[in-house]
Image 1 (cartoon, helix red, strand yellow):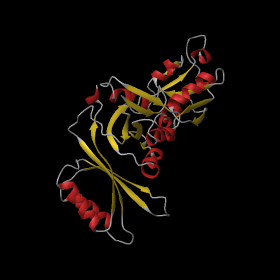
Image 2 (cartoon, one colour):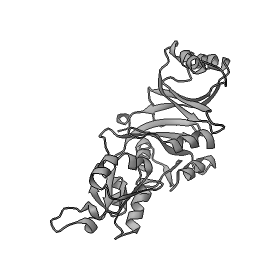
Image 3 (cartoon, one colour):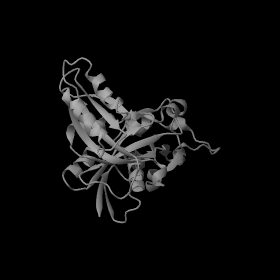
Length: 291
């Protein structure tokens, strides 16, 4: 039996988690309102894994979650997968409905959601509810719960169909994301390797700190991968938070550690004074693989 920590029931994280673990019979879900509590659940041993959204098609990296993985906890990456982020405008039709049956969005005074979900729907909000105040909360599921608990206040939420159904609310507008191909990438983190599913695609994630006052260090790092024809699917610089102008590089590599080439590349990079932290070597799943 596995215990999984994740954001609240009805969130995109909740939907994505159930897709990854659909083959397992005995799973205990530990839902938390805050992402910090999700992390701490696994750090403290209450749960076996945490489900962490780390990137979105529209918004890019979820910086807060990446910073937790880098600076606050040491939880190895065990699997990654993508899941479609389909957001909807949620509220009570009875509060907006005109005699004609149409909805009067001018009665909405505030729209609340998780900041990443809100950013995925900006074009819809600007076009249909430009007058409404926006407010960020800890998850889309939390936003829907707030709407449920505050009737008659002119509040609507951006969230999932499941969250609307769970809270007996209505879909005021369906699929309001700005792009049809909106996916969120999730990371499964914890101490135990994930073995329930197999994938031919194996990735390795690392952090690299460059030596100070070493001109061309980043070029040499990239060259160590390039001449070995090792593909990098993602590279991102983030502040180390130690001093202004100090950055680490987060790199995702399309190769397993169980090869000759990748450890050799790491040795070459470390030889010039770089520090490498391996975050994990893990299977990567497409949405279609998990259907």
